[in-house]
View 1 (cartoon, rainbow, N blue to C red):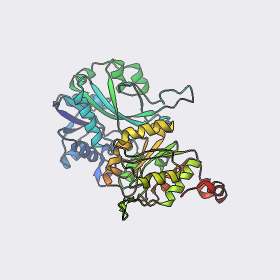
View 2: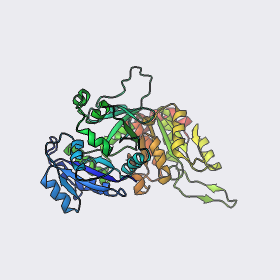
View 3: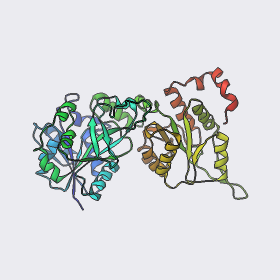
View 4: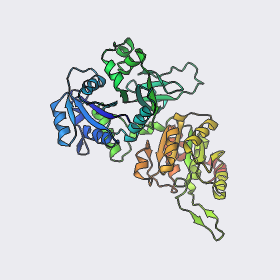
Length: 425
C-alpha cells in the first residue's frame, strides 16, 4: 500500500491576514485545527511546513511535527517539494493551513482514489456551486471531462454560457492536492506558463505541461480563511451559528427533495390493533409544500420505506415526484433531479440521519433537521432550528420563499386567500 504524507504549508506573512496560521479559533490556533483534521486520517504522516519560527514553535507546543523551510517559495507546492527531500512517501497530500473546516473523510477519499488507480498522477477535489458564487474571482472554478479529468481551472465563471437556455453545473475547486512522488520530482523543472501567470493558479503549470489532474466530487465545504472576516465566519460555523451569508445558498433553488421519516414525520412508528403502521405528520409542512409549489418550486419526496400511510399523505399533498422503498438515495436523487428537469446545484435535500448522507452528495444544498446527529449536521450546508415532524420543512420553505422574493405568499393575507382554496395541510 502506498505510504502517505500530509504536508500542511503555513506561511506567516500573508498580505491580507498576517500571522493567519496562529489566529485563535475557539481556544486553538488555526493551524492546530487543520493539523488535527489531518491526523484523524488513518495511516498517514502529518507535517507542517513553515517559513516562520513562531509557527514551528506553536506546532511543537501542541505536540505536532513541523519543519522549517525557505521563505523564498512562491507556492505551497514549491514548499512541499522541499519537504519531500526530508520526508519520504509514495503520495504527498498538499493541505492548506487556512482550511480549518476541511473534512478528513474527503482527504481519505482522495487518498483511496489515488491508491486504486496508479495511472492518476495528481488528484484534487471540487463541489457544486450556484451561478452567483461562480461570479466571485476568489472562487476558483474547474471544468472536468466525463472521466473526471480537469480540463481547466479559472477565476472566471467557466464555461461561458452563450445560450441562456443551457443549464450549467458550476464546480468550485477545493485546494487539496494529492501528488505522486514522481510528479513532485519534476515540478520545479516545469516552466511557468502564461496561463498560470494570468490566473495566478499554480495548478495550471501542470496542465500546460500535459500532466493530467483528476478531480473528485465532495459535498460542499466550509469556507477557508483568507481574511479576518473569513475567520469570523468559520468561528460562527464551529459555534453552530448560521452565518447570514449562507442564505444565498437558497437563492437559486428550483427543487426541494425531502426525506419522510424523521423530516416530514417525527420518526416515530405507531401500530394499530391490526398491525398497520401509522405516521405522525405536521400540518405546517403541508402548507409549506403548497406555498413552494405556488412559487414555482417543485417538491419531491424520497424514502427508504413504502407504506399506505406514506402514499396517502403524498397524494393529499399533491406531490407528483416521489420514490419509495429506495435503497440507494444517491442514485434516486439523480433520477428525481432528471425528472424535475433541473440540475444538482438548484436542488436542496432535507435529511435527518446517516441514511441520507448519499443523497447529500447528489444535491447542491444539504440540509439537516435540528435533531439530526451531530455527525450528520457536520456534513450539511444548513442546519434547521426545527426538529423533524414539527414543521422542519416549513422552516426551509419559508427561508426559500423569502430569499427568492416570494415573502408575500407567507406574509400577506390577501395573497394567501387567493391560493387558500387549493391548500392542503
